[in-house]
Image (cartoon, rainbow, N blue to C red; front, side, top):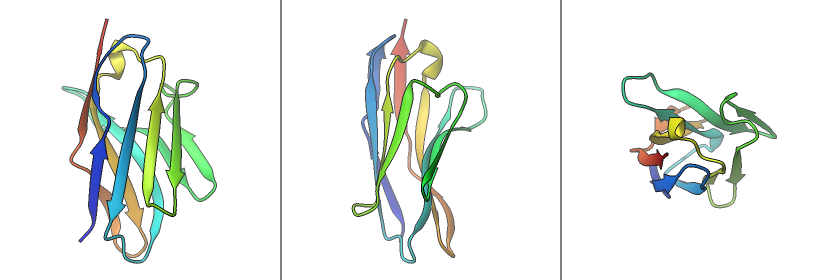
Length: 115
């Protein structure tokens, strides 16, 4: 079955950096898109960044601070987060869309930014 294993979350001071990693396995027909979503307490899950084919998309809040990258050979996706702000505090979820199978989510990794 499809498994997504995230790592790299933690506690960081405002202005600091973190790098999230996600390894996908059991992807069968191949991955169409990979990305990251986040959910803060009391809020809906929202897109942070997505990479599909040769294009990337970022939430406005992530532009200029976060960079998503993908290693197709390893079925991995990364999120480099710089200039972190307290409002970036959330659980971050790895996301993949797999051909013919649909959407899958990781278990989430906590990112906490202290002021």
